[in-house]
Length: 377
Image (tube, rainbow, N blue to C red):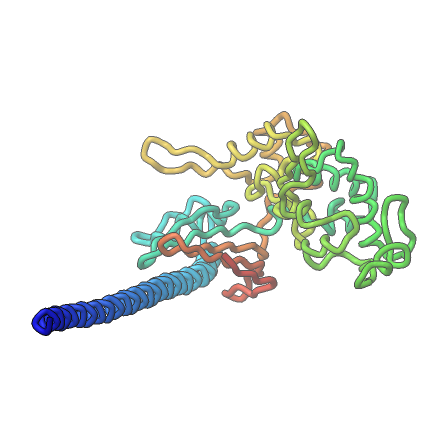
């Protein structure tokens, strides 16, 4: 009996050792697994942190690159204004359209073109970017303060011309906006405080707005001042969707009228520099006639590759070359006279990043004297 107990005890002892070994081995495995999990979490977190830092560095590099390009583009645009100053000075030196270009003077032809009328889309490469330049005399637009060429004193004539401008800008008669726009404009620029039937003055309209303001009762100082006039808004001025889509219809968009207007000049339009849209605002000038006027003045290139000068020397030459024009209606609104006030638009571009600078300036004393200045993307 004792032997059996001893054996049994011995067996128990060996079993206890085995159990003890298993327990120790299990504890070691749990600790290793926990450590592995912790290591994996740490590695994952470090990977996320590194990826986040790399992404931030990439974004910052892109932003820095954009601002470097933007700064260069802005410098190019500003330098375009200096190019315009140089071309205007060179224009003053050209005595006749037939004057021969000095050898090696690559700026002479652009200056000659400017003497004829305007420069549009002149492109010059500089460094890693380009400058695109427009130099257009302000009389290439309609003076909103002088639509009748006598200080807007003839309201019937002003109304006719303003309606033409609105129509070219896409604000057509069926929109039922003409009466309010015309009357409100006339009320804004006249000297009295009596509102017209569809117009507005300080006491009955502008003074009731929040914040209130007064009708100017004087000519406009800028084209953008029209935004203060009842009925006018940014869409009418600069274009866009003017009427949302109705059921079964498309939304109505307009091109706007700001590009047709100025507040400088005697009210006469320079036919050698006006755009087709501006020409179409003149009495009796439709799209076809306006296109013909431009085609005639642009000239042609001869067999030697020289562009012939065909800009209009005077108003009589225009009527002789464009017989469809109604001289009796149009003559008082046009001119071929040069102007010292011009609008310069310079666009600098570097690897797809653009900056635009434009100004209205008067050239005199060998330099541009800035009247208005704007810059942006």
